[in-house]
Image (tube, rainbow, N blue to C red; front, side, top):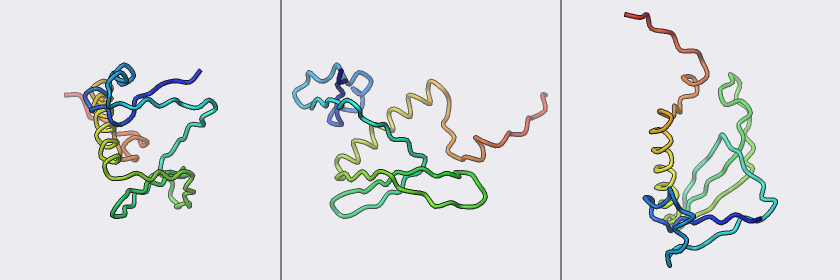
Length: 122
C-alpha cells in the first residue's frame, strides 16, 4: 500500500509529526509509488544557477582510500532556491534531533574509521 508523506511546505517545527499535519490547507500530500527504489549516496556535488540548485549524488567506492577513484553520479536533483532552503531547514532539524539522541555526527571520516588513541585515566 502507498505511504503518505507531507512535503516541504510543512514548517520545520511540524516535521516531527508531518504525516498528521497533512490536514493543514497549505500542505500537499505525496503518495510514494510502489516499487520505488531507494538511493544511497556517500558523495554529493552541489552546483548552482541563478534560478536553481543542482545536486549530483553518487557512490564513492573509496571514501577514505589512498588512491582516488572516479565517482559515478547516479542521480541528479534540481530544485529552486525556495525548495532548497526548505530542504536545508528540514535536514538541519532532523540532524539536530539525531545528534541530541545519539551524539554528534562526525563528518571527518578519519576520526570515524581510524581507532582513536585512548587517554590515560587520571
